[in-house]
Length: 440
Image (cartoon, rainbow, N blue to C red; front, side, top):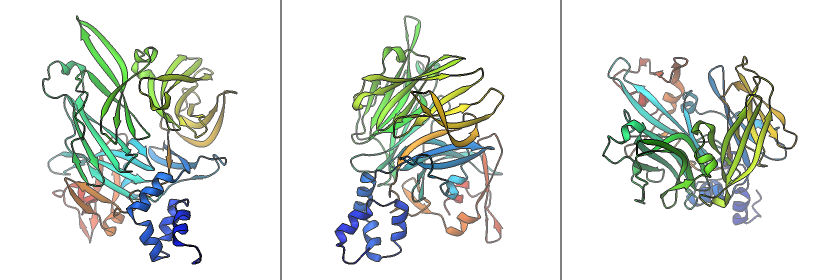
């Protein structure tokens, strides 16, 4: 930029530029680097940048693929395959916990102790999709046996601080009556402190009868889980679907009641998604020749108030199926279409509600493997060393040499990944934790 332009105006211009370009600007000018690296600039950029993208993840020959599509008037012409950082590239079966402010949260557990004692290390990874930065977070005290742990991820809308929420709860309804201890245990990880702690609020809904499923959506500073409340009264069993919300600013949990017609629907027919900045619940119905999704939207963030927005009606030939995977910025549903019961492949397409037609996006993968997540560009994590790991209040950084010599060998169809590390001509020893692959 010209030296004749005041530096304050240069700063405002840079806040509107792509994040990847700003990373390059840091190598051009010391003044620009000093500005871009400040926490204030990172927060202001992440709160103001409005260019929307869609992240698509799908499986191709048992390998996870990622595609980013600019969601504007050029859609779907601007497609790119983001460079996948080494830690993420090795997580072939990682679960996506959520996406918020351009950060994707993945979760995986590792087998440790090759040739020695067996143990599991649970890790979450935060990946900035725009600039490629990744940080790892060790997840402690994960439930096992009659307990299980679910995670949620989001960025606080007030402080623009990334948070991971961990809820450990009783897994099976049959165990609930026999357990007298606290049924919920909640911990929160904040990137600014690099440690886990208890939430600020004490209003945890200590209801032993609530069972979580793995549907979680982050919208406008709130994390939402779809849950089932099971009860037995006078030897009569009943269940009800509802939503648990978590406010990332006040750190309070609340129950969100659903309309009666879906509160008592079979839970497997319900899912959640994000449409623009609103939470939507998808209700599946229909018969083999006509698949129907009813789209319910929570009105203006007001809990307990849902409106049936519209109906997605697929007139389907025999064996044809469609799964709603997300929504465009325009509000149009994005679906994965399965051509027939003998075809294991799925195609991603945009559904046009008026004509009921499907416009193929040219992304094909294994059936039922496509997922779509909207996101915006961000500079969050820019001030963090790449591949830093947070574990028990300590921080570790992996060396460049170790990272490039690490590789994956996995057993297809399982969730066990075995890592072998070669460094300076010597094999990584079984006595060292596998975690040293990311933490020297």
